[in-house]
Image (cartoon, rainbow, N blue to C red; front, side):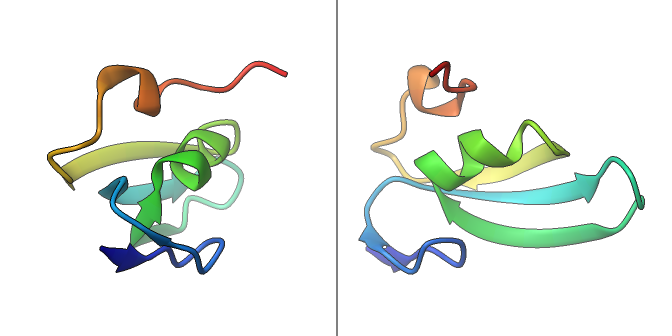
Length: 65
């Protein structure tokens, strides 16, 4: 279990990735839950370094509302 740095929830679905902001080019390495990671894909390019063993491919896709 980790605490997501985006929503502060305790979760077992986490992704460790470098996020690059498309508008500014700023790079940050963040550990996020799968929901925050998917939301960030609209604004950032992400390079995944590690995931929890419980994360599945559908957790890494953009969400459609």
